Image (cartoon, rainbow over all chains, first blue to last red):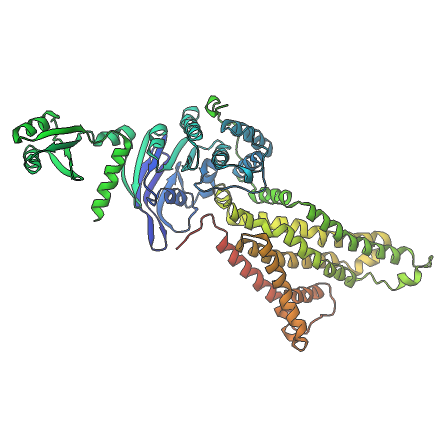
Length: 308
Length: 282
């Protein structure tokens, strides 16, 4: 497994950014999904020891984060969220420097720096000072410094933030290509669902420091596959009551829509029949969850309600 | 060319078990700190060295044969000579520290480079020693190294073992005073660099911290017992003890050492607090 968390928490003063997480992230690419402030970045920073106040246990690639931190940092690559640059260096100088700090010889680091800069699309700009780079180029150089030493686990924190659509697509294609070409696992923290759908096999949805759901992307979407969004004209209350009698779970979704979760084994015919029996006009009957975004909104919504 | 047309290739090499990251940081820092202004300061710093070297030459070679004999007689190449040279270099050392040191940590904080450093196998001490190495390199080039070269030159020119046997302790005194000066002043410079995001403010505060207590000490000349409030006075007091000279100030030598140690410890505490990969807003 790539990461094993055991009651892992990260706190900033009174605020608990990551709240007693216990889970396992298997090898492969996992998307850490959540709104701003969900604790995604804090989880990564806590695992790497970049924040002072964390508690609980965690193992990365089988090594303990408290006693084997330097060994872990040699095996991982980290692309921070902010515009982090090492001033005064050229692009190739910065990536070589990162490689040397990770334990590569100067010659190897230089050779590899050229390779990864070509890979991330900074071949032309590699001799320019990094301070002169645009936002998109800064994202690319951060990715280059993270992969220069061919890490076994790559932490990517909002890798496409500040990039134009073309650049975003290129970076996502590159990220999705990395695990296929070598034994690199990826943890991708983002609030952009499409990024996760495009690049990750698994997803872990976080909110308010807690893990709401994790599993394969298809599995998460499938959890809500039996839920339908329904709109009717007529006696809505009677329709709801009849659905409940037939074993459905019904929840109002705004003023006009109903979220209807069918009982096991039932199909949409049940909703159609109930509408006929209660004399309401069925205006809409579509699957409630069509994408990861829908699942995400459902989960976050459930979490918000739980806290109220 | 779109980047996805190229493939990600694994690297087949072997990473070093324990990379000397402090050395890599220091080496890169020295390279980055090299500017035209540094070169100019180093040339300026060479002038007193050449002057002192000339004095050594005069005193050892011109004593009997030249019209310069009278002048040469007035030159005493003793422990005080080397102490005096180190003292004269202090102002240039301050300038070098400002030019090379003010941006060492300030720029890393400004460009948020610390998360990159600390996501690699770099610890607090590796980072600090690496940055301090830059100060030691440029500071040493204008203080300790020329002083040692002058001492070697004196021994070579006198050509007798008597001088070395009398002043064998001078190289150690040079190293000791150089270390005390660089650790204290370098520590203050690093702290100011870590506290500010601009090199100019760090430079101004640095000068103020070194010279305002010294000015106060001179203004209140009757308060020489309070000389230990001045970093410069403490360094000179410690230097006099190390070189076996008469102490220039009436306060005890141990107080000078203690004062410098407290300043260094305070610097370390501040650096420990400031050098962290993530800004935590509580």
